[in-house]
Image 1 (tube, helix red, strand yellow):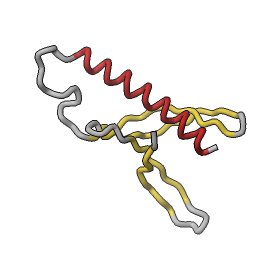
Image 2 (tube, helix red, strand yellow):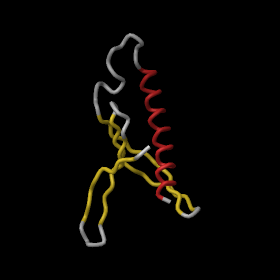
Image 3 (cartoon, one colour):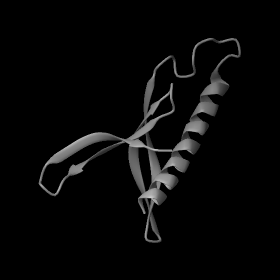
Image 4 (tube, one colour):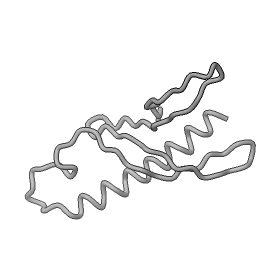
Length: 95
């Protein structure tokens, strides 16, 4: 189940990142030496992804962080543990 979620999520994320990169690259002059994101290392964006659970798929929104130098990607999560403690963290997405 978790592997399927990661696979589906990674596929969606890669597609979104490729589309964004293509759109940004088209806007740059071919002689420009500035990176498409203006030299910023990490980028945040909001996107929709699909979760599949026992044959039932549903869509969810998330906030993602991409390291433009390495391609590593994280999703922001927050919630409450069984012990009642709250958490807010960036969880890496393993490709």
